[in-house]
Image (cartoon, rainbow, N blue to C red):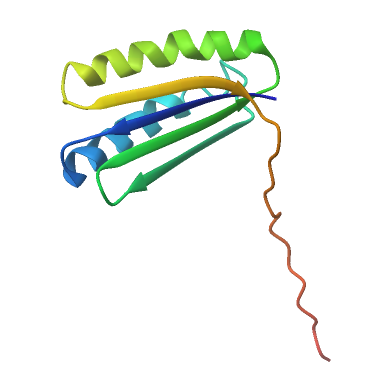
Length: 106
């Protein structure tokens, strides 16, 4: 699995919320086109937005990087923020699956 992680830091929480809404909408539209296997976003109370993506192939990752770059370029024209990002390979991932383990008593 291949990953792309973005860490964006905004001057205020309000700006981070606006950016998170814009990014989630824009990146959400890339799920099918770029064959994303996972897209996770988190909003930190200090005005940070972290985006984690997961892909099966490096080709899908490269395609996403190009399209995501366009989205972030548009965002840069509207809001001031600092950005750090990197591509990598997942070496360990765990997510509990949602399941219902309740018992029904009759």
